[in-house]
Structures are given as C-alpha cells and as structure tokens.
Length: 342
Ligand code: ADP
Image (tube, rainbow, N blue to C red):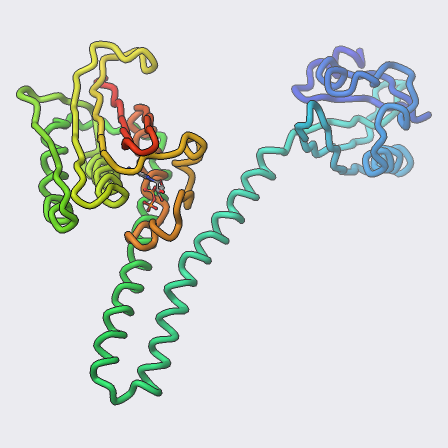
C-alpha cells in the first residue's frame, strides 16, 4: 500500500520509518538517489546534514520541515526543495520526504537580478554625465556661452541615450507580455519593408550607405503585427548600417518559401545582408542575449542599447518564426528572419 501511494506522487518521494530507515521510495526517488533502498539507514542514503536533520526533526516532533537538497550529476547541479511531512498510515508512522526541483526558479531569480544590475549600470552612465554637466553649468561654466552650448549638446546626447534605452526596455516588456498571443492580421511583407527602407534612407545616406531593396512584384502575406515587424527590420537594417564600414551596403532579399524545413510550413524569408566586418562565430550563440555586445565601445558610440537583437528574437518568436545569423569575419553578416504564412 505504501509503495502504491508513493508511486502515485508525481515527485521523487521517500517514506522514512521512525527508526530512521527507508521504508519505501518511488521510482523517481530511486533514479534520483539509487541508494534509497528499503531498510537502508537514512544517514547512508543522503549525505547532506541539512536534509538528514530535517527528516530527523520531522520524525521526532511530527511537525512538517523543509530542507534544500543539492544533487550533482555529470557536473550539473540540480536544487531540490524537500518537504518532510509526518504521516500515519494504519500501523505505519514516519516521515514522507518529497523532492521538488526548484533549479529553474533559482535561475529565473538570478537572470532577473542580473538584468536589473545591467539596466541600472546602463542608466547610471548617462545619468552621471548629466549630473556632472549640470553641476559645471551651474558653477565654473556659468557665464561661458560657448561651453554652455557644447555641454548642452552632450547632455542632449546622453538624455537621448537614456530615452532609447527606456524605449527598448518598454518594447521588450510589451513583446514578452503578449508572447503567447500570435498576431493574426495579414500583412504584406514587401509593403512593411518598403516603409522601413523609406524611414531609414536618410540615416543610411548620412553614413554614406546604400540600401538595396526591390519590392516583390506580388504581395507576400503573413499573419503579423505590423508595428512589431517594422521594429524587427528597423533594428536589423540599422545594425547593418551601424556596424558596416562607411560607404557600405545593406541588401534586403525577400523570398517565398514553399515549405520551410524547420517550421514545416510555407513561409516568407527575409534576409538583411551587409558587407561589414562580420561576426566571429564564438559570439553567435549569445548575440540575441540582452545587453550582449561584441564591442561595447562601438555599440555605445553608435547609439546602441544592446537590446535590439533581443527584441528581434522575441518578436520573431511571437510570430512563430525563426531567425538565423550567417557571418564570415571580414566579409559581412546575413540576418535571416523566416515567418510562417499560416
Ligand atoms: P546594439 O544596440 O548594441 O546594436 P543589438 O542587440 O542590436 O545591440 O546587437 C548586439 C551586438 O551584436 C552589437 O553590439 C554588435 O556588436 C553585434 N552586431 C549586431 N548586428 C551586427 C552586424 N550587422 N554586423 C556586426 N555586428 C553586429
């Protein structure tokens, strides 16, 4: 009866009798800890004092107890929260220990802490500069009209950097909020890219860049959120301009895909191809992480927030599409977004 009950618990579970020996363990518990054989002494099964004393306390006082159990397998650590409850089943009395994997909760906490630290750091730098210039304008440069003009220019730059960062953070949180709601509105991809190219023409010209784009003859429609796709292609084309050499070129290619092998659906593929410096393959897996930059100095100098590709990744995921990056150092990069047609 104990064995059947233990087996029904959807977590690793062990029943320890009052003489501190294993009375039963379900299959999940045995695969977690093969030592958990019937009649084996508790201290020989687990060698972690925190967990042993929680079970012993539970047996002694009949009160529920909690402990953390760290499991290490092939160098990978899993963290369990163990709940010990005193149980009486007919003649049997003992402690029931259930192991709940809380590794992902811990990891989520860590990611959140790291994110907050990054945001604070990114905001602190321009803020410190602003405060410094305000101080100077109130004091030493009070009556210096020329210095005032120059400092106000720098302050405006720093303030717009903060503005861009806050804008990108808001976009990111909005996309994350409706990640599960796939957009349904049919939109012509050629039309969306036409708008983006038009918007960026001036920026490109200022850096001596050429954007090469030919709108497909026939409409290629995908269910989408127009504003979000505008953001995706703006970020990708802007990166091509920002990181490309002066007088570089960004080419946009749109293709109809009968059946995308990975999405297993008909799709539209959009590639943004630049002839810039390219990206070392070691960076590719981390490129879409928030605040990941290959060259922080260059990114900041070009007004980057380090969030552009993270936003792209989330929007593409919301559209149930996929993104890939191909790049050869010294030759350029190709960012391809594939969006399903249905
Ligand atoms: P940022 O705001 O810094 O541009 P992104 O998330 O858009 O942030 O990009 C992350 C990093 O990836 C950039 O800092 C840059 O180092 C690199 N990167 C992005 N696009 C390109 C590109 N087309 N060519 C070379 N490097 C790129």
